[in-house]
Amino acid sequence: VSGYRVGVVGATGAVGSTILEVLAERDFPVSELVPFASNRSAGKRVSFDGSEREIRPLSPDSIQGLDLAISSAGGSVSAEWAPRLADAGAVVVDNTSYWRMHDDVPLVVAGVNDDAVDAHRGIVANPNCTTMEMIVALKPIWDEAGIERIVVSTYQSVSGTGRRAIEELRTQARAILDGDRPESEVFPHQVAFNVIPQVEMFSDGDDYTTEERKVVNETRKILGTGEELGISATCVRVPVVTGHSESVNVQTRDELSPDACRELLARSDGIVVVDAPADGIYPLAIDAEGSDEVLVGRIRRDASHERCLNLWVVGDNLRKGAATNAVQVAELLHQRGQVRAAREPVRVG
Ligand SMILES: NC(=O)c1ccc[n+]([C@@H]2O[C@H](COP(=O)([O-])OP(=O)(O)OC[C@H]3O[C@@H](n4cnc5c(N)ncnc54)[C@H](OP(=O)(O)O)[C@@H]3O)[C@@H](O)[C@H]2O)c1
Image 1 (cartoon, rainbow, N blue to C red):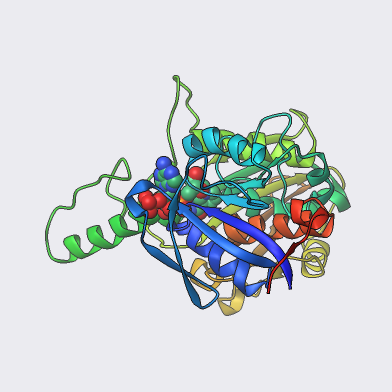
Image 2 (cartoon, helix red, strand yellow):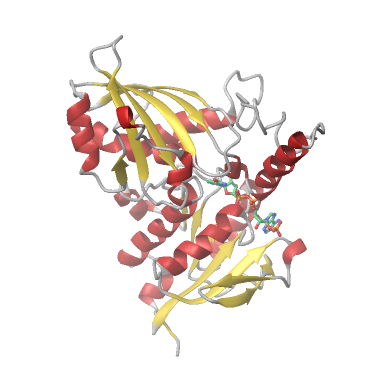
């Protein structure tokens, strides 16, 4: 059997634990799985494909001999360790925001801009979850009718912020139902029974958040456009555990009717059209959870503009929004012979 020595950095996290599941589900050729997390977790175990693996801390020694590393341990960890992992011979698929906008780092959504992966120099970046699911839904429209402008408002789940955020929602919900006043540590305000119009931070006096800036910049990088594509984003946190919902208003270059859009999306890979609103059928976060497809519904004409459509887009932020896309990028690297072991296969068993 041949396969790769695969490191998963951040293996105890919301994204990392999903990466372990998706690697096993999709039968990615793994000869040895090496889970990494912080020193706090060293010696603990995670399960992969039915057996237990011991977690290691990142160190110059522990990262030797990997063919591929999929990293989701935060921007500062990737800033330091992605180049070190690449120097040690691994191709790194990075889920954090740190490398996404670097010129030498391709930003890849599998099924949207696969060929971009070929330009990598050791690191490939995975886009932000909000951008990822929007772009999966919009790419067929981009190809068919062109897009001039996008206005998106998001309804983002707490798991997008990680494990501690899921716990905060649960703890706050219990406290409120018990009549107590909850504390907020992860989010800037109470998230349970509330809606917060701030995802991530306002930095340097900017009146858009870092998340909103990512949606704009990453979308343009993936589609290979500049400011000629107008994008306006408002990112909002809602008390949902998993699944980001997005209201997307898209202005096309050419006319596209709602029916033609529905048919186009229905025959596109990675998308499921869920659109019979009169029967109460439209995408729901609780239905998207666990799915690798992006759900699109409420496809309708914007009555205020002849070339604008409104869509409701929902995806699992931990799967296609993060882990599934990272594993699909690893598959692209494998298929294109760009993982070290593809040139020097590791023989095991
Ligand atoms: N959640 C999403 O939907 C999503 C989507 C796309 C991208 N991302 C990005 O993915 C990254 C992780 O997100 P998450 O939601 O999985 O967060 P999380 O649940 O908080 O997990 C963080 C992981 O990083 C590990 N870690 C922290 N410091 C480390 C260090 N110094 N060295 C090695 N490992 C360290 C943690 O290990 P311990 O258990 O030992 O603390 C844990 O495994 C973030 O950069 C995030 O922006 C998240």
